[in-house]
Image (cartoon, rainbow, N blue to C red; front, side, top):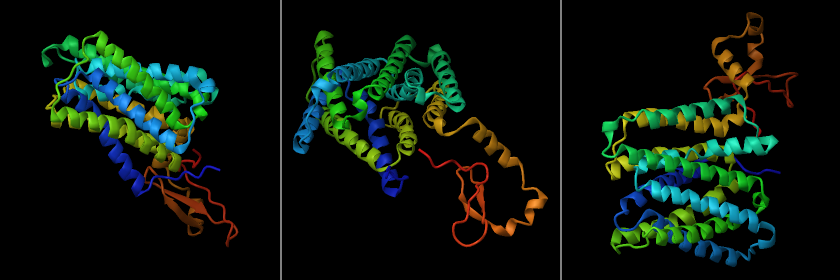
Length: 361
């Protein structure tokens, strides 16, 4: 029996904190780029976080079933490493505000991959609309930029493209996890595979490209501590705890505040300019991501019913039964659901008006 519950005040507060942390990580990588290359910092944070996750597993008595999961773990780890290789290299050319938005296109790519791989994950009309909105927004963000808006527009476009590739790698990671034995493995095991692979891959890439060096400064040590302990370790353990306690669909929608935090923090802390064309393109991208993520709960006939409910009233012959109708509570579209008490007493049947979402997850 699923005992997960809807979001309460504690969950909302923790999700706001997580979104703030996740939005800040790209800003911190960009802010310390002069002291340490982003890919080298991500490599080091992955190594420290992997050691911490391994310690947690040891204390819990968890064992890593290599015989059953090593192949999927290797693929997931390589994709995770590629994701942050693209992020690290992309931040050398584009802003943190751009990177966080393009990185969070991952649900679009995950939805397309799962639609292809799993019959139970077929996309609905609302989700296809979200994909169209997202890719239309991407076209605006890429093609609408004026050549005079940046000192090196070609470099910014390359950085943005690497951010999009990072989102695709993240989406592919989700598909592999869902379609492999990792789908039933403890979250700490999957996270350990990802962190170990990222550490090895990014450390090798840092030395191969001559970026394995740093200047020890207080801001650098603070950034490494933040990324290693807070971002790559504590925030993910907190996220997994929330997923066990609360409805994943509600948490997923809340997590899309991360790009908004990232854009705001980049503009505030790094004085990054946010171009009008990018902002215009980012709005449909974020709307599309939300539609893709929650669109499976919104069927086409339900959308039409909600619209119809806005512009229709009860027939006059039903008005005589109004005294038997009592509120079921407010709906998400601010209309009042009604129920008709049949037969009186207990065991009444509640027939909700159009617009009330079904409660199934």
